[in-house]
Length: 146
Image (cartoon, one colour):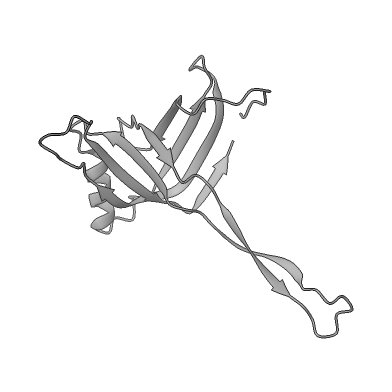
């Protein structure tokens, strides 16, 4: 699905799709990545005086989604399912970066077995003029890039 080109894509055209949720218009996505741990090992009779690098476990960082408050309870209901111990609350999340025509998917990140682990409501200020923004932090088991 990824399309190579000479000029980098813009970061502001993207779609977030969460299984089971109708609305998912987010203003910001952060935390997409992966880290692979490497262990060092050296046998006592090794001729080389340096350790070998052995691939270990990998881990996926938490992914943060931010959106303006629209009065929808869909994210809270998902969080509540997890809080109440539902085993069916794990969902797949797709984050698609679009090209300038907003029709072509340039790259996509697939989050497997995602669950909300933190919700932060908006900061309210009687003299402020900013948009009220809510934040949802997801823990997932795997991120694949397409």
